[in-house]
Amino acid sequence: MKTPSNSILTVGSLAFDTIQTPAGNAEAALGGSGNFFSIAASFYAPVQVVGVVGDDFPQSHLDWLKDRQIDTSGIQVSAGKTFHWVGAYDQNLNEAKTLSTALNVFEHFDPVLSPLHRESPYVFLANIDPVLQQKVLDQTPGSRLVACDSMNFWIKGKLEELKKTLRRVDILSINEGEAFLLSGKRNLVSAAEHIRGLGPSVVVIKRGEYGATLFTDAGIFIAPAYPVATVIDPTGAGDSFAGAFMGYLSKAGVDRNLAKSDPAQWNTVLRKAVLAGCVMASFTVEDFSFKRLMRLEAAELAARQNALLGMISV
Amino acid sequence: MKTPSNSILTVGSLAFDTIQTPAGNAEAALGGSGNFFSIAASFYAPVQVVGVVGDDFPQSHLDWLKDRQIDTSGIQVSAGKTFHWVGAYDQNLNEAKTLSTALNVFEHFDPVLSPLHRESPYVFLANIDPVLQQKVLDQTPGSRLVACDSMNFWIKGKLEELKKTLRRVDILSINEGEAFLLSGKRNLVSAAEHIRGLGPSVVVIKRGEYGATLFTDAGIFIAPAYPVATVIDPTGAGDSFAGAFMGYLSKAGVDRNLAKSDPAQWNTVLRKAVLAGCVMASFTVEDFSFKRLMRLEAAELAARQNALLGMISV
Image 1 (tube, each protein chain N blue to C red):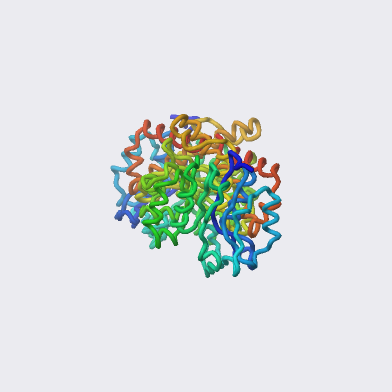
Image 2: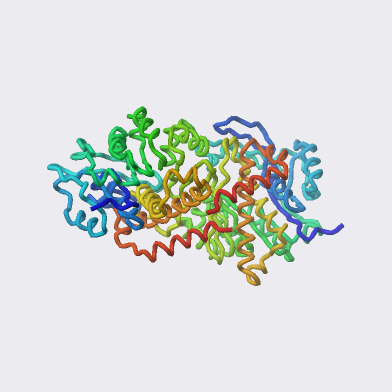
């Protein structure tokens, strides 16, 4: 067995989410950044997901991932309970309020990659402890493109470690509020430029229902969210954005070298990848958990991508 | 003297604004929807502005407007004080908090148009009492294109009159929060479709730093705001958006008939007009009052328009 040349490795959480939104509630629904990312990315490329679950995690879901050609051999099943997040959204669906976090088996998670996983050319470090993100980077020195995410918790609690991670990644994908926190700036352009100065030459700032904005050497690309009629649950929108974004890049076969060898092409592919991310996120929010992604058809995905392109064309 | 074939008539306020923003304060700065709209529109087309000021209003500003080829013959100077608005913004610059409103001479404003003003082909009803908006419509039966704005105050206080206005206009330009209030919907697409059902076939929803979204028979166009490095004062952004939007349409010479005779062309011109509005608003917010617009050069305007186009191109 060989690692496919466009394979994406992601290291993140597989979790239960208990969620309240204005549209309703979900009790211990399947979630976690590793889950959302993998499922979204699998529309574009082979995915390897590394994480840990408790012995209460449904085998049927692991089987479902496998059936989708997602390599789950990196998911360790440990004695104990799965990571469980409890959160709520008010009418402002752009920001979740965390009510409780039980790390459970995730607390002692230590990503040790298999030889096959170490060869994955595309790497996405989901929102986990930056010390663990660096451990993954130590094990994937041959990567062609690395992106990462982070959040308030690490920006506040492990800033120096996060900065070490940032110096080693090509792309940071982060929420607007988190970008402000990380940069100390209250303005999108200033925040992105500050963060680009910390390491990643590409910064994608996710803005919930307002879409995402891409910052590169070639300038700014402002992508809107695809406007959906009803938002049920925004949980996982950012991770599925990142999944489709990385999926698009790996399917296009581009890597960090393109930024220098053909900046115009690099820039175009990045812009299309951002749009792919926006479209994927728009499906995610239409139902709780990743239920909408689980029943998403390739034709629906393509149709909405065309529609979004039409909404930004002059 | 004849009314130019692309002339825009606007009826709105000329005012003093006392403003607090995170960037600073302005005491009795020049403002008012009629002012912001006219100055913005004058970059594109001849403008006639109708309103009322008190005898405390600086003649030098009226002279400045005239020097810009803005027809100020419809500005009545009444004994008493000029309309004075006091407002504040917190870190969320998308929404103003009104601290006090002194209507003063504006309280008994009754727009009676001159014969020349009645012939204006383009009409913009700024955010004033919908009863007055209808009075203007009664006097401009030969118009080619009519747009209007409104706000919470009228939606809450004079909804039935506002609905009468809406049945008679082609275009409504309105803030996101106000669109939600007017429609009773909390979703952009549903809100816009509901409002289109009330009369205007074109609805532009202004979203502050997130840009503006256009809804027509041809679908949705999502325009971002031009990202500025520093926002000093958002006051007047919406009115100057509308000024450039209407200005662009009148310069292009399009009217409501084009919607039927050439829907594709109608749609393209509307999209470009929305971008023109976004760019104009981005200059407005860079200083207090319309100071930035008063020193804006055509070349700067063109450069930023090209830049914004580049930021949405794939």
